[in-house]
Length: 125
Image (cartoon, rainbow, N blue to C red; front, side, top):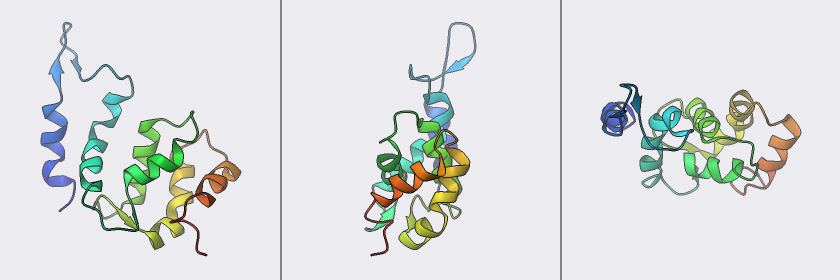
């Protein structure tokens, strides 16, 4: 149960023709690049406890106003190599910083570490 089965229908159902023939979606300028991540939001609702979802990652990264939804989605997509819609705490601890750093270029390494250290699921105490 992953993204592949419903990704196409999710993406195409939100597309509508515009006046000039260019396909458009919602008014949000960030939205066009994020359609694929909408399915991750749906999958997050059924994720096991103590796992990291796109919503969890978004809550962590939205503390910084300069991080876009596209960057959050790209970081989570890189993190969720099995396309389950969630990753284990262990995977997040091992690869979270790397995936965030590669996809959220406005964030420096110390800022990422600070954000992650505020996350209870990241800390190994």
